[in-house]
Structures are given as structure tokens and as C-alpha cells.
Length: 256
Image 1 (cartoon, helix red, strand yellow):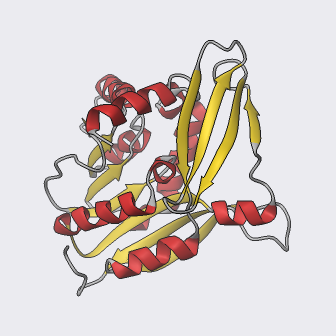
Image 2 (spheres, helix red, strand yellow; image 1 turned 90 degrees about the horizontal axis):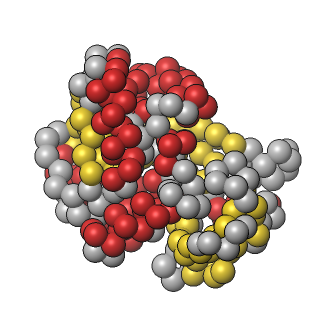
């Protein structure tokens, strides 16, 4: 998908089916969630942090407040505008760059990389593998990568992924439907519609699971350090449905 198309699509997704302002510093829940995450995993954050799919920049303001260097990248211009606005208001030195994660020009070396929130939902297996290949030139042995994702395979198994989902917390009543499970590309084809019928949206949600992610990471020279369940199914005999993984770059990892 060309960069301009990606930008327009992300902007539309987060202006209709979701609200980009929920991902900025003004959202109390988002703010508290990322402050808590940083405090819990502080030992994994090195001096130079790269945040891929940074959204409204909340993590950047938290990281910069701890005295670390931070660069955030996101494909949605609305998100980057929010991030820069709040950075100015709070006197933060965090840097925010607008760019497609598949094509943006990356510079510098990093000690910690984060891929949090909805980012993995927007990246298929092929797209994420290409991203890992590009990152190899900007990380060294010991670099840590934190990845937050939903286990859709477990949700299918548990029966908790609903074909039709109605949300009312964004912009009135929005109905999301799963149109197709595309196993070849590894994603769900989705649609969303407002209750007023004024707009319709088509989007996709990538399919991830621990066994998919870990095998890919190992092939690119990353080793699992820690896996934390971030959401259980609510049933003791069913698999968890969301995780935060921490990976470390090995000393003999390939660079292409």
C-alpha cells in the first residue's frame, strides 16, 4: 500500500471507527496505562528508545520525563499532530515523525524498540517481517523489543471474537463486522458502519498469536526474554487472549 494511501486510510479509521484523541495525553485511561507499563518494565528501557506506531505520543512524554532519548513514528498525521501539540505544552524533547512503518527513513541506533497498542493489528506477518529486516541495521546485540498484541487464534478458540461488535464509546453507535478470514495474508477483513448510515469503512485486522510471532522473531535473531499475559479469557481452562512480549537481539543475528 503506497504511503499516501496508508496515511489517508489510517486517518479515516481513527476519525470514524475510532477516535484518535483516545490515544493522546488528554485521555486519562491511556495516560495511566502507559505510565504503569513504563514503571513495570523500566528495566527494559535503554537510553535510546524507538516507538513504532506511537499514536498520540503518550509513551514519549513518559519516557522523556525519565531522561531517556525518544523517537516516535506513526503513519497517522492526526496522531502525530496530537503528539507534537502535547510535547510542546509539556516542554518535552521527545521527537515525533509521521511516516509509513513500511517505508519511512530510519536513522540512528536504538537500545529499546516498542510496538504497542493497536500497531500489530495493522501489520501482517509479511509486513512485520520486512520491518524487522529494516530494523536490523539500527540495533545491536542486546537491544530489547517490547511487543503488545492480541492472540486472535486463542480468541477464535475461546469463541470470544464476535462476528458483530457494537461500540458506543467513540462517535455514537458504530457496528463492526468481520467479513472474511483471509488465512493467506493472515488478516481479518472488517467493515464498520455508523448508526446514522452517514459513513462506512473497510479495514483489516492482522492475525497474531505467540507461536506465529516467536518463530518469526527467532528467525530474525531475537530471543524471548519474558512473556506476560495482559488479558485472560476469564476462564481458567482457556488460553489467554493478549500478551506483552519482550525480546532481546542476539549477537549473531543476521542483518538482512
